[in-house]
Image (cartoon, rainbow over all chains, first blue to last red; front, side):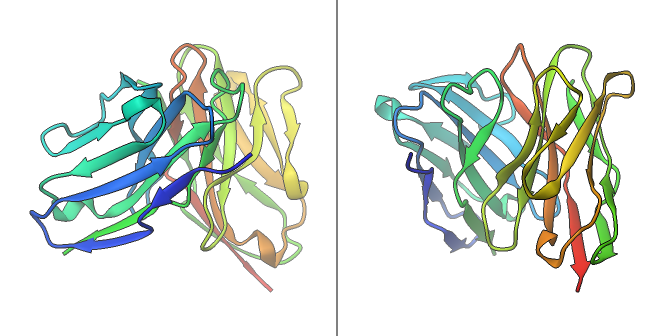
Length: 116
Length: 113
């Protein structure tokens, strides 16, 4: 099965600018997660989608972050305006097929954001 | 709230040394447990997992982990590390009711050749 695709791999912006990240999860998988991984920390869940509906966005800073998953396939994560503390790797993940209830995840390579 | 604690942030070992990385979690219900590994320049990938049954689970590349329910622990072990094991290791927990996977802060392992 194809993996989780993410773009761009790297992005450098200045604070107060906006940025968007794109994810295409494993084909046919209904569940999609966005995680934020700050240097020296473990991945932190930002939002969980089931098809095009949000299951959990309790950790998403909604004043500046937004995410959508139109048509239940691709997803975009947007930050506007960006702050210095948003510098991190943004990871998209799909559960292993049949693995929604196990928590086992496939990760994309991530999008590394640097905010200057 | 669910949380995961990894005891060591950085570990340096010589080749052939034994490895044990500690992981404790806080959650009172039923959990699934994981160790993920991130090799330099690569994405996170699953090393091993525990869902139920034998609390001693074996993963890829000679790694194993033991689930001790009474201690809320899931420590990772390898009898003899290799230079190629240099990577960052993350313990993760999912409560089976919420399907939300929480990660520890990670342990960065460096193996000297």
